[in-house]
Image (cartoon, rainbow, N blue to C red; front, side, top):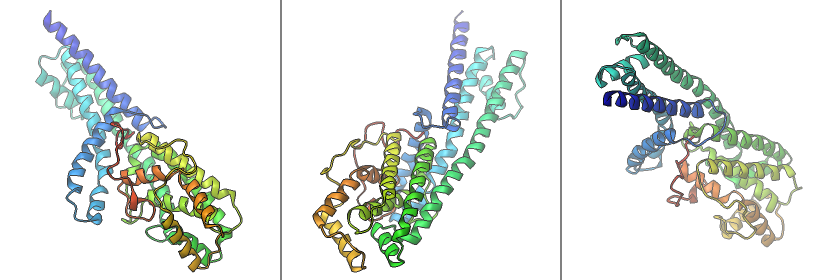
Length: 364
């Protein structure tokens, strides 16, 4: 009687473990929206802890960047292995529950089935059916990963194409002031509207992909001095400077670009449980000091860029735009260990206090 009860418990526990792993895999690889799931979180947190130990010993940013470039790919490849392990353990319990003589044999049967090795032959029709179902699940998990990677790398390619093109316009590292100077130099203020439209679309795509594919935010750019966070910050700051400081006809497309940017940043922050002020008010503090804006105005004036005469109003207007994305920008720069760039990662919130579930708390 006791043996029958233990077998029943093993069977129920095994079915539950397999169901949890499969549901998590569907949420991660199939469901087209970002949902909280504990299993990917465990994997990514464990891998990140190992990388943090190593990066703390890095001598400079270049070494740290080389190390962190491997973080997301390794963690992502560990994820299906973790799913296969859970399914294997679950099926071992199921084999034990349906009558396999001992746990050693149950583990052998499970490993042979999920890896489709075939060296452990089922003894009866029930064991055969269980082995077939496990083999099918193992192949499905591998197929899901294979189909998941091209989709994610397509999103990565779209993101990095815009980041690379921005270097031509804003320098490296990207600078909002440099972007405005270069457009002025080529008499291109009238063409800035096209840039705002392109980046508004880019922000919409970024929001969708970086909340559906949680690991994508941690895939680093091919060039060590590039980052999707600092590039986005430079574009948003350039649009804010154009609206607040530069004496040029107002273009509503700059407003829409800024709005698309801070909505995108906030949604990504929500995904990682990063706190921010949802309804910032005019006059709330920002990380850019007034002296820094004055220095930017002086640099623009020296380049011949026409400026609005009222410096006080320019500061109020710029701060009013920047406050919408200031904290999310800095938090994401810290989260991704972005390379140094003006007005973003050079003051990112390293060591900031997040909720217990925050930072890497919601990888998918």
